[in-house]
Structure formats: C-alpha cells, structure tokens
Length: 393
Image 1 (cartoon, rainbow, N blue to C red):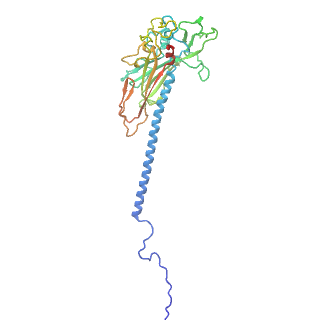
Image 2: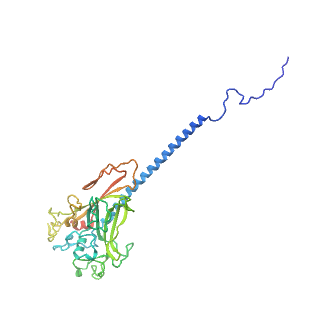
C-alpha cells in the first residue's frame, strides 16, 4: 500500500534545540568596557609623558639658549674693551721713551656724577678698560656704597662688571646712532704738531677740533661706551623669583650724563662671576714698573721690554671681592676676562632635585636642593685692544 508524502515545514532557529541567541552578555560587555578603558588610559598616559618630555626638553633648550646668548652678549662687549680709536696710553705704548704721565692713580667710582669728573678721573677710566666688584652674600642696606641708585635689588653673591671703550662705529654711519648734542664722545688726535697731552678729548660740550695725520681733516668722533652688568633678583615684578641679567648704559638721561636705569636682558641668569687675568710680569721676569721710562733688554732691536708687560696674564685670575678689592695695578694691567654664568630654568621640574655643585672659578655654589635645573657656562675673553699693545715680536 502506497503511503502519501508529507511536506516538512522548516524549523525556526528559536525552535532548534541547543541554539543560543546572538549578541553580548552583560559580563562580556563589562569586560570589553574595562579593556577599552585600559587602552584609553594607556594612550592618555603616553600623551601626558610625551607632553611632559616635550615641556622638559623645551625648558632645557631655553636654559641653554639663555646661557649661550648671555655669553655671546658679554663676549661681544668685552672684546671691544679698551678700544680708543687707535689711542694708546703712554704706559701701554712700547714706543714711549719717557715716564708715563697717564697711568691711573686710583680705582674710580664708576658711577660718579659727571659734573664731578676731573681730567685725572677720565685718565683713570681710559686706563682701566674693565672694572668689577662683588655683591656680598648679605646685601648692604639700605643701598650699596657703589652705584646704589643703578644696581637695585642685586642678587647676593654675584658680581658687577663694567666695560669701557669707544663705540666701534661712527655716528650716523650705517646702523650707528647719529651724533646727539650733550652725549659724551671720544676723539683722538693724530696730528703730531697739535697733539695735546693726553692726545684725546673726552667731552660732551667742548668743540671737537682734533685732526687726523694730515693735520687738516677733523679726526673721527666716537661715542663713549660704559656698560654695567649685574644680576637682579627678579624679572618683571618684585618677588617673582626669576633672577635676570641687567645692563645699564652710560648716556644722556633726563638732560644729564649718567648711567641710565638698568634694563632687563636675559631671564634665568642666577650666578655671575668675573675674574681678571693680570699681566704684571715683564719679559725679564721682573714685575712691571710704570713709574720709570721704558727699558729694553736689547736696545737696538727693542724686542723685550724689561719693565712692561708682554700681553699675557700671569698666575691665577683674580676676582674683585669686598674683602679684597682689585687694585689699580690689577685693573690697569688686565688683559683677559674670565666670566662664569650659571643659568637656572624659570620653572620647576616635578620630582627633580638639584644636588650638584657648580665651580665658578675661585668659588663654588650649591647644592641648591630645589627642583630647578641649572647649567654652568664659562668663557675666557682676551682684551685684544690692551694685550696686543704689549706684544713684542
């Protein structure tokens, strides 16, 4: 007997035994969220570390740039110290045969009121291309005994440096400032028949009439330059704690000639030491003697002065301190300057402590035990305009 065929109906997935529903369970969803959060946390941590590293690198770069800029600025000025447009003081001239009359007599007050300048005071300035003194660990109150109105709020245990020379460009030529009535200018005489003693004029009102070698053309006039450098204990506002390199320039201010109010140059300069290389031994091995006429070991060839320096610093470099100020002989015979600049970052570094010591020549600073990063820069600069006058073949 033949059985009839039955059509089979399809079975839905819901009706199939042992088949689970598609999708995530609550546990799987929570695990996925935790993994996602961990990944996001890792990415955020990486981003923070990269940002922090970039910030520290930028801080370090700025610190190094400030130090290099400070050295370049100071070097550019110090290298011109003692430039008087060809004028050579008698005590530095190897061609002089008489006892020099222009040797400095005293260490000048570098901020003396211009109205009190005498001929001897000008001789002292011209004879000392650089000058320095110390800001003691305890700053005198209410003000400093030297340049107190200019060196305001100095950082303790730092130095003050003066650099003097004639401007290395002529007024109104190129980018050089045009001549201004009332400013202080230097003019050297080159005409032998009309040479005064000393052979220059350093003045602001006297008509400049010195002549060149042709005894007809008026000699060049150059602005007198005296720059004062020191470290102030703040940058913009009192108490901000950012030490700053300052500079005061000599010139016409408020109708009078004086060192002007200091201007901020570079922030973060925390330590500043200045040492002088003194040329106080002649070729003969004896001490220099400017109180006598120049003498030579070989009078015919004149190759070795026996009572003048040779342009090379002898012995250890000296620092002008409160306890032991520099003497006339040391400053008049300085032929090189060694500067030390300690630069500090402007902001702290979390987790960092500066436990290092820094050797600034004859003195040591640190450890500071604070979260500021520091770097020490130093450079020796030869006073070419002074040292080369004393060289012999």
